[in-house]
Amino acid sequence: MFMNHTKLNPNDKAIDIGAGTSELLIRYMEKYNISATAIELYEGSIESARNRANGRISLEHIQFVNEDAKQVIDQYSTSAFRLGICIGSTHADDSSRKCKAG
Image (tube, rainbow, N blue to C red; front, side, top):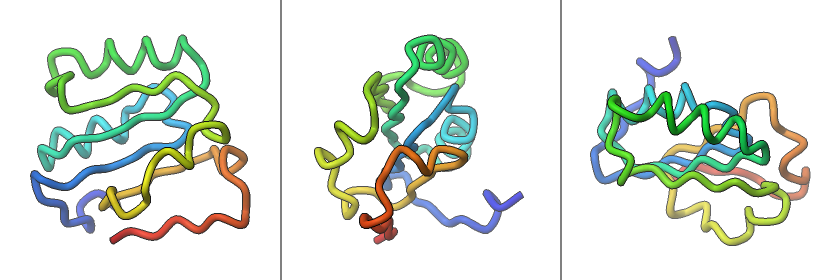
């Protein structure tokens, strides 16, 4: 799995755009003890993500944002995040914005 090729430190932050139930993000948090932001439009997915995360990671280290990523993405600085995830949700961001890890 590509997770084994990622090197993160406990002070690093990750963002998942179109996070769904946040399983990949939660696994990164478990493995590297990082903090994270999950942006997901669908409330049911956010609720499922909270349930998945509960007991596996500290809920204090994950921010769930139940909004349309197109509307809120500019509130987040890409330089604040060491890891960006956007799998299957490329429609959530326009093609003029480039995601670059720091």
